[in-house]
Length: 396
Ligand SMILES: Cc1cc2nc3c(=O)[nH]c(=O)nc-3n(C[C@H](O)[C@H](O)[C@H](O)COP(=O)(O)OP(=O)(O)OC[C@H]3O[C@@H](n4cnc5c(N)ncnc54)[C@H](O)[C@@H]3O)c2cc1C
Image (cartoon, rainbow, N blue to C red; front, side, top):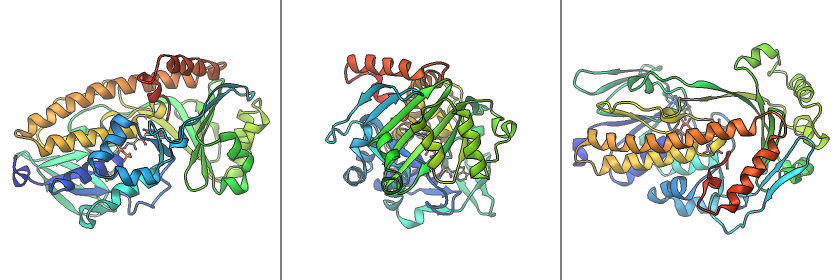
């Protein structure tokens, strides 16, 4: 299809998925506009580290012409993994080869910045929060932003994450609580201020798991460590538990109480972290979420297949979706058919990852010695060779 016959393409959301899509379309001379609700890439802390898999996240960066730059930013050694229980007993340890680029880690902020900086300045409109979208009788869509700006598009791509405002155009599904809450904490300048924490977490990820709880520590770039305090609690736990998340010292005490029978070295995560505790309930869309192809609108990434991070696939899927959708648009003879083909492939791989993610979550945050169970699974996967599902396990 010739480029001017594609009409106006609008992407809502400048996460890793939306930015990858915009970048590849731009490389092929296809005009596109991206609307993002945040006013800048530094508007809020961007979260932790992400591992990009060869066949998805890294493949996307190859197609986007950004792989060389990525290699200068990523941390191959971040693949190290240790699994311990609440007493500190080590059940599994894997030290990665620094030259192995299977699953290198990159900070979410650095990845977004890499993609962001590769786009022409006028492609992205930041500080535009989509308020509503309406299907028009001619097949176009009208978008209304909360600052009064409007736009009309021939093709709208919802890359707007978990609580997508585009999703209701194609599906009535809504995210459901996974049963697990993360309280995110971090250590800045960790090597200087908390060398004992730096040593405990090491170069990669430490999983401390027992009794329906976890302390999952990740080495990030820029001298930081992020820890996910993970709890199997009801969705309304923050309100019910009356933990005052705006009073850090009170939160520290309350969380220490919850982990009272854990090894002292692990409690140091809670004792000494920076004074900022962010509760994040985990949500997921139904496994195998799908819809009938609609004229002029589709979804990618979390908007299409939100899942817990326990398959370590979310960003990889979002970037692969973006790549396949971009190539489908660029090569389309019949755009609706091309989008249909993209969606069918995306549905199948997302269903598999969502299933793994739910299974892994149930295994990791389970009663008793979950570390032992998880370590056994890792060992089995290691034994069965490199082409197995090891690469798809738990935020790795
Ligand atoms: C605690 C945690 C840890 C994770 N760890 C991993 C991991 O290790 N590996 C992994 O692969 N994945 C991980 N994930 C998942 C991963 O972060 C997501 O799957 C990924 O970011 C999805 O990318 P996306 O582009 O689809 O959506 P998002 O990254 O959510 O981006 C959506 C964008 O849309 C914007 N937006 C939303 N609504 C609007 C609106 N109304 N108007 C305009 N803009 C809007 C948002 O501001 C945002 O910039 C983790 C997630 C969490 C919560």
